[in-house]
Amino acid sequence: MDWHLIIAATIKIVVFVFLTTLPLVAMSVWAERRVSAAIQDRVGPNRVGPFGLLQAVADGIKFLLKEDFTPNHVRKGYFWLAPALVMVPALLTCAVIPFGSKLFGEKMVIADLNVGPLFVFAIASLSVYGIVLAGWASNSKYPFLGGVRSTSQMISYEISLGLSIVPLIMIYGELNLGRIVQYQADNGWALLPLWGEGLSVQGWVLTIPVFVSFVIFMTSMFAETNRLPFDLPECETELVAGYHTEYSSMKFALFFLGEYAAMIIGSGLAVTLFLGGWSLPFGWLSPENTEAAVPWWHGLIHIGVYFSKVIVLILFFIVVRWTLPRFRYDQLMRLGWVFFFEIALFNVVLTAALLWWFNKPVS
Image 1: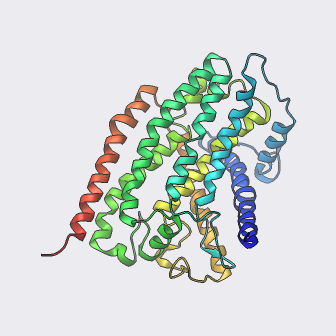
Image 2 (image 1 turned 120 degrees about the horizontal axis):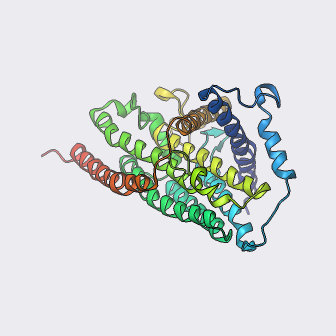
């Protein structure tokens, strides 16, 4: 048994998941409340700690201390299982996302798989079972409607989400997320090919399908994470609170944490695929390849760059939530099946045609 690998993986899990991602969830909740207050010309949380920074801690303590009430009419086993099925997949997907280059000789990824995007989609899709179980096990009309809505919504947009990254896989010829980031560090980010081979005519032309993929990917992430304007499964004006109407205390908190954790991981995947991951512009401080040695302070800078990009996308999620109105359900489904599905398919064909044109043999 290789104890070195076990110890290194354990340290990375503790640091990335428990000391970084979960606190980032709490800070995302604080940022959401502050940004929404600014948009609505309110003050927002400002009493607990400086600038209200400890409000998330106070909310967590409140969830822990509240009575864990389980209604008598629910199916108790499934009712208890549902929140875990929402939270756990969101955290498991952290495993394959590279949050840095190297630090003290260790790759800053928990599991360096060669099928990273497939692993993320396979695990993340399991969270829909938690939402379905929550709606069904609550034995109540509004949670059940929310669960049914979420099922159809997530299945519909998973197709577009998966198809949106196919052009990138075709361009990179790679499914290892670490090597995808290294390619962007050397040749320009997918959306900003401003150095290396990205400056070629092929690099600039391929930004067209890449930009289309980015728009579809980000919009589908809103739908997958049940964020406005796609929060139909839990819309308060119609379904009270949707699939978590009957939940309280820490079981409700797990749903809450699962939504924000999924948003953070989705932002991390978008940063990795489209915005160069941990890499700086123009290849600054980037290693020559994934196996090259990296000074420890370069590694720290790369980790900081990755999380800075993730925070920018989280703020984008928040601003969109508080500026756009909610879609009607028929509009949501029509957008997914009539527009995004066809556009994503056409984008795959367009990318294949462009790659064939630029790589065809010269007679």
